[in-house]
Length: 113
Image 1 (cartoon, rainbow, N blue to C red):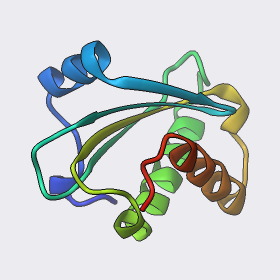
Image 2 (spheres, one colour):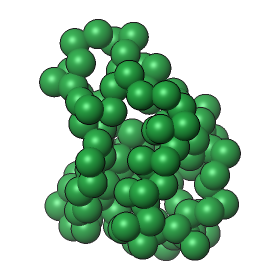
Image 3 (cartoon, one colour):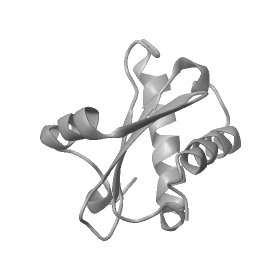
């Protein structure tokens, strides 16, 4: 699980990122990011019920993505708020496939160091 200081939790932060953030689309993910004035990056993972009606599938995917981010947080540039929206084609992928896809998405959006 991500540390509390590494998570986006407030609704005003989500609204600000949706309004002002730069979007990036890749197969499986939609990444929106906005610079913050902090020393570290904060993350949120959004999985809608449109992606899957089963909460177990959504929660498993969210937990896997949070763990990938937690273990590799030092590779992400500091000072960004990042919202990752998951698309349906990501469900059911293995941990290694998710890791490769999320790194590809973050690399294309130039958020990796």
